[in-house]
Length: 325
Image 1 (cartoon, helix red, strand yellow):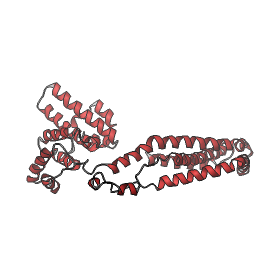
Image 2 (cartoon, rainbow, N blue to C red):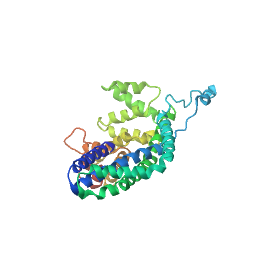
Image 3 (spheres, rainbow, N blue to C red):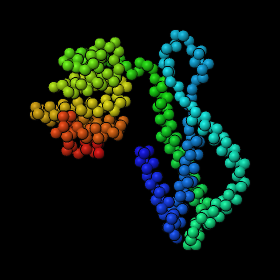
Image 4 (tube, rainbow, N blue to C red):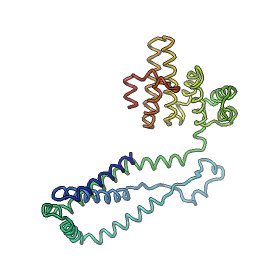
C-alpha cells in the first residue's frame, strides 16, 4: 500500500509540474497544486514528528538489579532502537522554539511568498494565485499535519507496540505445549517413508516449535488421506500462538478442502459436506484477515488442473470467491 501511495504521489507531482508549464488557469492549477502538496508534505513531516510513540524501556541499572533466579526468564536479546524517538523530541523542541521566535514575522513571509508567486507566474490571467497562495500553503500544511498525526497514532503506534511484544516474548512461547506427541509421531512416520531432514529432526527433537508443527501439517497434506491427521493436529494448535499465523489458517483451509472433496466423492450426507464447507470458509476468512496475500494463495488452490488443488470444490463457490477477491 505504501509503495502504491508513493508511486501515485510521484505521478501526481509530475502531472502538476507539466500543468505548471502551460499558461493561464492551467498553469495556476499546476502551481497551486504544487503549493498545496508542498504544504501537505511539510505538515505530514511535522505530524509524524509530533506523534512518534515513546517506547517505555528499562534502563541498564534496573536490568542489572534483576535477581539471578530470574536472569534467564524473559530476557531480551534485542532492545528497541530509540534514535527515532530522540530525534523526534529534539526536532520537535527545536521547531517549536524557532517557530515561537519567528511567529511575529509570518505576515512578512506570506507577503514575500505572494510576491514570489506573482513574479514566477508568466501570465496575467493567473493573478488570483499570488493572493491565495499563502492560504493554499497553510491549508496543505494543516491537512498534512492532521492526516499524518492521526495515521501515526492509529496505525503506526500499534505496530511499534507489536514489535515490543515480540521482543519481550518469552523464549518458550513459540514452543508447543500441547499436541507434541501427536506431531512427533506423525513426523517420525513420514520421515521413515522418504521424509525430509526437517521431519527427521522433528521426530526426535526434545522441543517442537510451531513452525515444526506447521511443517508436519503441510507434509501430511501430500499423503493420501493425510488431511484427517492434519486436521487433528491443527485442532490441537487452535489455542496456541499458531492461531495468530496466517499460514496456520491457510493450511487448515487446505486440509478441510481435501476433506470436503473426499466427502463429495463418497456421497456423504449434506450435513457433513456443509460442516466441511463452513470450516473451509472460516479458515480462509481468518487467513485473509491476517495476511491479504493469502487471497491469491487460496485462489490458486481452486484450480483443478494443478497439483495443489485442495480447494477445487470452491472454484465456483460465491461466498468463498468473495473472501479471496
